[in-house]
Image (cartoon, rainbow, N blue to C red; front, side, top):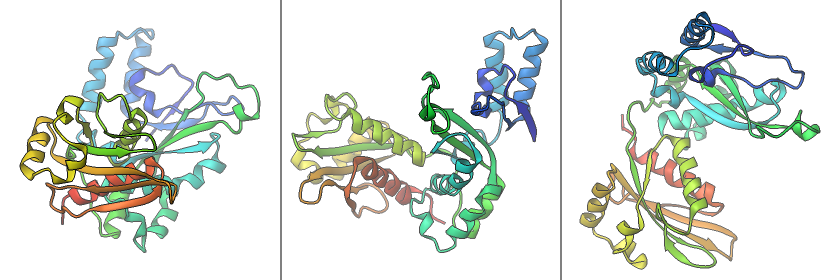
Length: 313
């Protein structure tokens, strides 16, 4: 493995291997791929003036030609930490390991495996690289909040072979390759109104954003229907839609599966109550969650769908 000095002027193709400067101003060394060294070295020989088309071409051959390039995302996870120092980074590794394991296998409940805790404890040796992204980028450092307590997105890239071995010990297998595109048919009832969640809808922008976060978390691409697609569907008749009607909508949206759900705000037990199902999937039974925020409700939706759509042994 090569080690690359972050102080050099790196091109965008190598941005993912950068780390943030620490409070002391020292520049840490972080692992990088040999291709980053190749691109940066070639650019320096050109006086740092590598043309963008040439850079992109080299990047395409470098990353697009790598057999596991797309699957590498499945071995990656991000957590939010305070500061870019070891005392907050190392304790975050087990959480990052859990998130990566959920995404890699499509099993949101993988941490419930009795053997998981011991594997998570040993997860630091599975980390191939890590990077920081300053969540306050552009905000000048002016006080303690802006230095030691500054929030960062900490991204871990886990070693493929070690992760695969760990998953095998859990009786799980990596879910590699293309993931199914999931269409969403969701009725929302909040304290003010009821509506169908649509890609171009006036309401629910924060819900759509949260759904996208859940999509990234489990590497399941999602598709929102547009208002025009939903205009003929009565909100109180969603559960009564025939399989034929759902199949037509799924096909029109270019999806591989369709998730039907209800998200209702509960006043008795403050929080959202969500009920989900995959009516055209291998397991059409409902699953639900209650008393949660909508982020948790959508993690339940996408994670539950992933668990039901992933390949069986």
